Length: 201
Picture 1 (tube, helix red, strand yellow):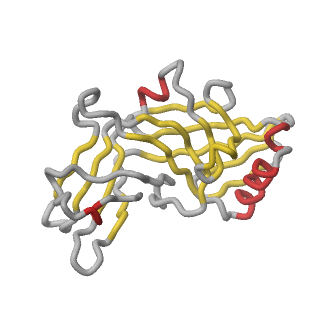
Picture 2 (cartoon, rainbow, N blue to C red; picture 1 turned 45 degrees about the vertical axis):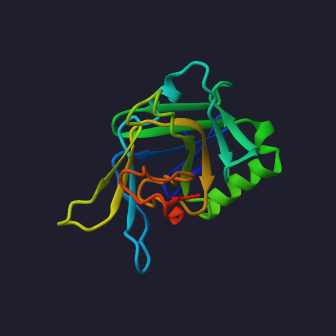
Picture 3 (cartoon, helix red, strand yellow; picture 1 turned 60 degrees about the horizontal axis):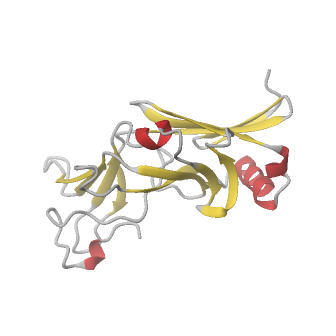
């Protein structure tokens, strides 16, 4: 039986048997518009392919933290310590974090729960990197949008190394509660002589 609880965006908090659990998910293959292209550029969109994080989730040695705002000084759960459980299916990456009393006793832990309760934290953002091409060919692909739908450049992340998930106030993917950062498209699809094409630095 649940004793109390609330939802915030794609996140859910439940208190059960003296424990506080935070859970959330974001579906794969959902397009997000990261840039409208401005006056002269092209719009840029992005999506995560199904099970893009499967190797990190399944690896017994790969640590993944649940953080507040991408700050490794503000951890609230850990995969290797058993307080963060992840499931990577073809439909979505889901997680459930069990927050200990020690975590809830920290300022960032109690603040995170308060911000969730107030609706100010509304999404989840992954911290990741794209593996080297020599290790994982086609870890990401860049393509032009179907002309009948628009003129955007679309980046698909097929495989990535996941280091952390963060509770955030402004996810770039409102419908999927996912935020992407730190990447640039391949030169074969975009003129890389123009370094303004770095996305989400």
